Length: 109
Image 1 (cartoon, rainbow, N blue to C red):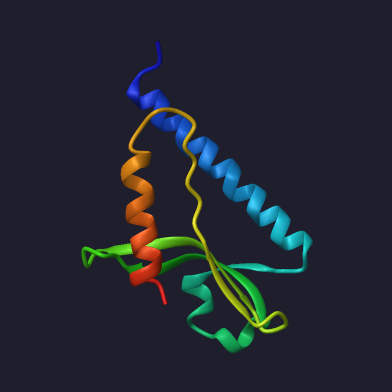
Image 2: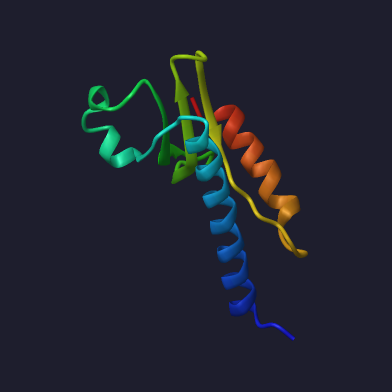
């Protein structure tokens, strides 16, 4: 039997694997990856097509939230937020996705 701590560690590890897969895929398509906190200080120093990590936003409840990735592409005229949620076992998925959806629709520019 696994403990809650072990399950949390597994979920964190699996989520990390998902994020690394996304990074590898986007960099293979020519998108460099940078931390938002560095990029925001001088966006002109970065290419017009980029993937930013840990991009802040204000949640539905007025708290600070972070999107895992924000893809900005002048070439494709796109700005896309990418949220990573790993759900391998029973849990609060029925709460996660409605909350995520509402945050995406109402709070993320």
